[in-house]
Image 1 (cartoon, helix red, strand yellow):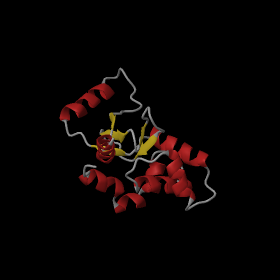
Image 2 (image 1 turned 90 degrees about the vertical axis):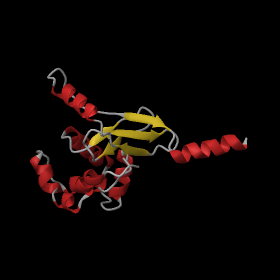
Image 3 (image 1 turned 30 degrees about the vertical axis):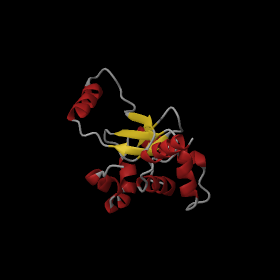
Image 4 (image 1 turned 135 degrees about the horizontal axis):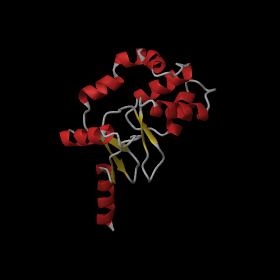
Length: 163
């Protein structure tokens, strides 16, 4: 995975956690302990977890939390553009705390998703042109490459060479 520099520091920095409740309130969301816990869990991860994975993690801290609460919170955070949802056609929806325009690579074998920062200014201009055109209401931006990660490709090459 590429180093995300200031973007990673901004999302996962020590100041972010203290600002979660006020940030939720500023967006018109109640800052319930469950929402703060779910947001804290997501901001602390880099693996683009599914709703189920987040549910398992927060349930270990708050055993009475329901999957429905986790899912509805993720939906609300997505609608308020606090997080992004990645909807690959080959897997369950995944959640990402980085909302800047960037791409993802998903391994079709192990299902790992990695951020791919796109530094091309033309991409950001294209996004701005489409979003600001007035013709469209952009609900989601997604650039997703699907293939084999280095580990799975190496394993596939080893197996093919051994047969």
